[in-house]
Length: 591
Ligand SMILES: [Zn+2]
Image (cartoon, rainbow, N blue to C red; front, side, top):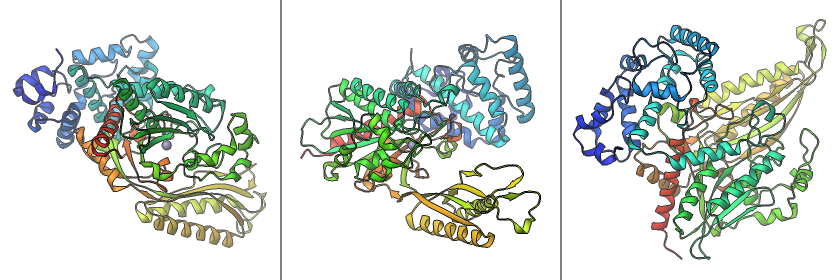
């Protein structure tokens, strides 16, 4: 019989422990100690209590726990616990070819030698359905390259994930909506631009065939979820509205983007479209109406990959579509105007996309964190306090291309070393602030040769800080340094500002609503700024906004195919969003 929260909270401790054998491998003390903190508001709260117990137990106790685990598909000295053998079975690890077995044994040996403990991986994976054998081997190879202290922590995180799934089984509570959201993201990721599709990489840039297929798929999902109206607007945003009981009600706006960076992750942006869609699916199936219209937008363009038009999708909603963008061309020489015409979009309809803020309650956005903070803290959700302001430039430094052998060092006008010098300055200057960041992400010598001093170097600059003044001071110093480097080296440069976004502090009332939602789930509250820019920055200019972050796996890596999150964390995001909607339902007087 499945266990219940009531049983967990009220049964005698020894009875609870008896029902949870093999939760943490050969280590019943963790659950035992955590139970001292009863009662728990939720299963998630119990999970976190055990995370804390292990975190406070010290390095030796943690190592003992890690070492209590069997090797993956190796010849374990100790017999496997029933739980471990079941999980390894499911992943197909008991049916390896001789080659796979040999590779795994070699990996086990190398790993054991490097770290002194066995490789621990939650083989049931982020969806709980089991990783493929190749995914397991790839992860093994990748993690072997980690530094020792990171890998120790990663082993513990995997152990907590193993326990999370074992607990879900014991309580027969499965993250149904989290699984759905996870699956929607997986389904959407089949659409990817040519050149990347062949390599199994995800790249969806503005108005490509893959991009338009994504829009169609999201729109169809919205219809299936029970949205009342669904349309693809004049810039390619997918807009679904779940109508209030009364037509003259205000609207709550939410959403995020469905375009991606090149070779990006499956969750960046998309999570913030699918989480509220899952909420609407539930509302619609219950025939429940809110006292406000609920508008979910899949923004067409946020990443600025194909054209320099970052935040094009959300910008259009606040009247910030810049008509000069239409004449920009992509690397193949296709103008945005042509791309839009090809997609059947009516440029003349773009101005009408601007929303009247008076019709809106505000904007909320769910997004994967895209950083390591929540993952390191073992906390599933984060409350965003402010989105960093940013400014971006692309530039070129022009010197003289000349013979690498005959030109003395003091007579060179080397464009690349000038940009290298600038990059080092950016690193040092941004570091001074503590919470500013600066990056030269692109540094390229066009037609460079091994025996030619670089005559040209193209580069990018990305500068961010929690408030506008700090960002501007950083940018001023970096630009002044560029000027002085070029003066000293006898070089010319051009610089184009391609994006500027103001810092966007969360609206206190909306931030509190997210906080109340997260607290209701029994998981700890963690407030944090957003280092990345988000669509919420644009809406911030015309209405109150606040964001919710969802923990990423693999140290929160993003803009990378390793980006990941679990179905359990996605479920918590759906629960938090549902809580926010219900709270509004009970606290907004119909007007
Ligand atoms: Zn994003």
